[in-house]
Image (tube, rainbow, N blue to C red; front, top):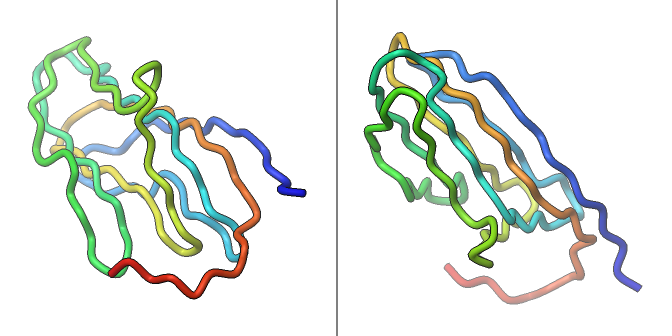
Length: 118
Protein backbone atom coordinates (compact mmCIF):
# COMPACT_ATOMS: atom_id res chain seq x y z
CA UNK A 1 0.00 0.00 0.00
CA UNK A 2 1.37 3.41 -0.98
CA UNK A 3 0.64 6.18 1.49
CA UNK A 4 0.31 9.67 0.11
CA UNK A 5 -0.85 13.09 1.22
CA UNK A 6 -1.67 16.14 -0.89
CA UNK A 7 -0.54 19.65 0.06
CA UNK A 8 -0.45 23.24 -1.13
CA UNK A 9 1.96 25.80 0.32
CA UNK A 10 2.21 29.49 -0.41
CA UNK A 11 4.65 32.30 0.21
CA UNK A 12 5.06 36.01 -0.33
CA UNK A 13 8.58 36.24 -1.73
CA UNK A 14 11.17 38.80 -0.64
CA UNK A 15 12.58 40.73 -3.60
CA UNK A 16 16.19 40.13 -4.53
CA UNK A 17 16.45 36.75 -2.77
CA UNK A 18 16.25 33.03 -3.45
CA UNK A 19 13.46 31.25 -1.55
CA UNK A 20 13.23 27.47 -1.17
CA UNK A 21 9.54 26.65 -1.64
CA UNK A 22 9.57 22.91 -0.84
CA UNK A 23 12.11 20.20 -0.06
CA UNK A 24 11.22 16.52 -0.39
CA UNK A 25 11.75 14.90 3.03
CA UNK A 26 13.83 11.79 3.71
CA UNK A 27 11.93 8.62 2.75
CA UNK A 28 9.53 10.41 0.38
CA UNK A 29 9.24 11.57 -3.17
CA UNK A 30 7.33 14.73 -3.92
CA UNK A 31 5.17 14.95 -7.07
CA UNK A 32 4.72 18.65 -7.86
CA UNK A 33 1.53 19.17 -9.85
CA UNK A 34 1.43 22.97 -10.01
CA UNK A 35 3.69 25.98 -9.45
CA UNK A 36 2.03 29.40 -9.63
CA UNK A 37 4.03 32.65 -9.46
CA UNK A 38 2.22 36.00 -9.49
CA UNK A 39 3.58 39.55 -9.67
CA UNK A 40 1.64 41.58 -7.11
CA UNK A 41 3.83 44.65 -7.65
CA UNK A 42 3.20 47.75 -9.71
CA UNK A 43 5.85 47.17 -12.38
CA UNK A 44 7.38 44.39 -14.47
CA UNK A 45 10.04 42.33 -12.66
CA UNK A 46 11.94 39.11 -13.33
CA UNK A 47 11.71 35.75 -11.61
CA UNK A 48 13.58 32.45 -12.02
CA UNK A 49 12.50 28.95 -10.94
CA UNK A 50 15.11 26.31 -10.04
CA UNK A 51 15.02 22.56 -9.44
CA UNK A 52 17.72 21.91 -6.82
CA UNK A 53 19.23 18.44 -7.17
CA UNK A 54 22.79 17.16 -7.51
CA UNK A 55 22.95 19.86 -10.19
CA UNK A 56 20.72 22.95 -10.00
CA UNK A 57 18.50 23.22 -13.08
CA UNK A 58 16.96 26.62 -13.86
CA UNK A 59 13.79 25.69 -15.77
CA UNK A 60 12.55 29.29 -15.93
CA UNK A 61 15.34 31.83 -16.18
CA UNK A 62 14.86 35.54 -15.51
CA UNK A 63 11.32 35.61 -16.93
CA UNK A 64 9.92 39.13 -17.14
CA UNK A 65 6.46 39.17 -15.51
CA UNK A 66 4.28 42.25 -15.93
CA UNK A 67 2.45 43.94 -13.04
CA UNK A 68 -0.55 41.78 -12.12
CA UNK A 69 0.55 38.95 -14.45
CA UNK A 70 1.49 35.40 -13.50
CA UNK A 71 3.29 32.22 -14.58
CA UNK A 72 1.91 28.71 -14.11
CA UNK A 73 3.66 25.36 -14.51
CA UNK A 74 1.68 22.14 -14.47
CA UNK A 75 -1.87 22.66 -13.29
CA UNK A 76 -4.59 21.55 -15.72
CA UNK A 77 -2.00 20.65 -18.36
CA UNK A 78 -0.97 17.46 -16.56
CA UNK A 79 2.76 18.21 -16.41
CA UNK A 80 4.63 17.66 -13.17
CA UNK A 81 8.06 17.42 -11.56
CA UNK A 82 9.10 14.57 -9.26
CA UNK A 83 11.53 15.45 -6.47
CA UNK A 84 13.51 12.70 -4.77
CA UNK A 85 14.35 13.00 -1.08
CA UNK A 86 16.49 16.06 -0.42
CA UNK A 87 15.68 17.74 -3.74
CA UNK A 88 13.86 21.07 -3.71
CA UNK A 89 12.22 23.82 -5.75
CA UNK A 90 13.31 27.41 -5.28
CA UNK A 91 12.51 30.78 -6.81
CA UNK A 92 14.80 33.79 -7.26
CA UNK A 93 13.19 37.22 -7.57
CA UNK A 94 14.47 40.57 -8.82
CA UNK A 95 15.29 43.26 -6.23
CA UNK A 96 12.37 45.46 -5.17
CA UNK A 97 9.82 42.98 -6.54
CA UNK A 98 6.62 41.72 -4.96
CA UNK A 99 5.90 38.12 -6.04
CA UNK A 100 3.63 35.52 -4.44
CA UNK A 101 3.69 31.79 -5.10
CA UNK A 102 1.65 28.62 -4.60
CA UNK A 103 2.93 25.06 -4.97
CA UNK A 104 0.63 22.01 -5.01
CA UNK A 105 2.21 18.59 -4.51
CA UNK A 106 1.68 15.04 -3.33
CA UNK A 107 4.06 13.30 -0.92
CA UNK A 108 4.53 9.59 -1.55
CA UNK A 109 6.54 7.08 0.46
CA UNK A 110 9.62 6.34 -1.64
CA UNK A 111 10.18 2.68 -2.40
CA UNK A 112 13.85 1.66 -2.25
CA UNK A 113 15.30 1.91 -5.74
CA UNK A 114 18.80 1.16 -6.98
CA UNK A 115 18.17 3.16 -10.19
CA UNK A 116 19.96 6.48 -10.54
CA UNK A 117 19.28 8.51 -13.71
CA UNK A 118 22.24 10.90 -13.55
